[in-house]
Amino acid sequence: MTPRWGITFPLEGLPVAANREALQEAERLGYTDAWTAEVNGNDAFTPIASAAVWTQKLRFGTAIANIYTRTPTLLAMNATAVSEAAPGRFCLGLGTSSPAIVERWNGVPLRQPLRRMRETLEFLRRAFNGEKVSMTVDSYEVKGLRLARAPSPSPPIYIAALREQMLKLAGAAADGVIINFLSPADAAHVVKVARDAASEAGRDPQALDVAARIFVVPTEDPQVAHMLGRLLLSAYLTTPYYYAFHAWLGRSAALEPVREAWQAGDRPGAMAALPEAVIDDILCFGSRQQIVDKIEAYRAAGVDTPVIAIIPTSQDPAEQARQGLAALKNLAPP
Image 1 (spheres, rainbow, N blue to C red):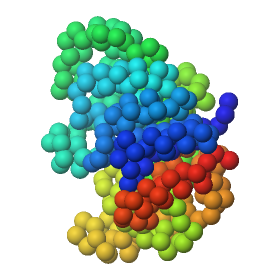
Image 2 (tube, rainbow, N blue to C red):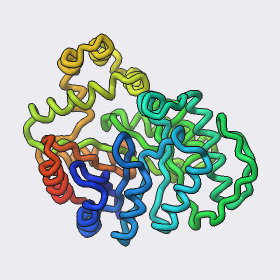
Image 3 (tube, one colour):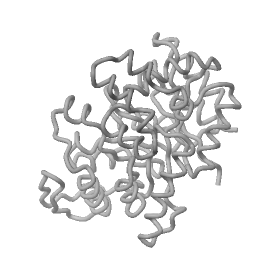
Image 4 (cartoon, one colour):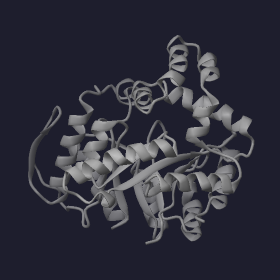
C-alpha cells in the first residue's frame, strides 16, 4: 500500500472555489488525502462536496465535524451526502471541539463529551446500516429515523482524541483516531493508548488508522517560526482541553507560566513565556528535508496518515495563498 500523505484544505488565503487547482495538483504530486477543519471559516463538509467533483483519487476527511453544533440526524445526513459525492473516498472525523466554539460562538452547552461521543458513534453506526433508529443522544430524543439512502459504502468514522478516555473510545469503537498539537514523541504515547484499547476490545490494533494534523511553517528562519509558534500555541495550549492534554504529556511546568499570563489578560507575557522547546517540539519548519524528516518521525511513532497544515508567515491573503501552493509542491510525498 502506498504510504498516506495528506494536506489540510482549503489553503489559507484561498476561498473554497479557488482550491480546485491546488487539489488537482496535490493529486498529481502523489498526495493521498485532503482533510478539512472547521473553526470560524468554512464548515467541514461543504469544501469536500466541491472537491469530490474536482478530483478522482484523493481521500477526504473531516477533522473535525463538530458533534455539538449539529443534531445527530443532521450529522448523519451531512455525512451521507458527502459520501455520495465521493463514494469510497470519505472519512467522517468527529470531535467535541472546544468551549469557545461550542458555548461562546454557538450557545450550546458542552457537557459530558465522552458520553456524547459514544452515543453519537452508536447512532451513526445504526443509521449508516440502514436501521430505523430510535435512541437518545444527550438531550436529543430521536424517534424512528431511517435515512432515505444509507451511504454505500458506509464511511469510516474517526474520533478526535486528546487524553486517555477519548483515545480508548476511539481504539475500542471507531475506525480511526485523529490527533494534533503534539510532537512525534507525544504521538508514540498517544497511539499506544488507542491501539492498546483496540487490542483489549478484541480488535486488530493495526487496523486503527491514526491521522495526525502536523503544523508546518514554510520558513527556514527559526525566528519567524518561533514568532508564529508563540502566536498560535499560546492561544491553543492555554485552553482548558489542550492545557490538560499537555499536562498529561508532562508539560505542565513549561506551560503553567504561559497559562497564568494568558488568564491574567497578559497576551504578550504569555507569548514570551512559551518555551522555544515546546514550539520546536510541535511545529515543523526549516529546509524541505528537515520538515520531511520530522513528518517521517511522526510516521515512525505510529501515525498512518500525516495531514500537513501549512501556516503561512504572511497576513496578506494573496501571499498566504502563494506560500501555501509553494509549500504544497515543495512538500510533495518523498
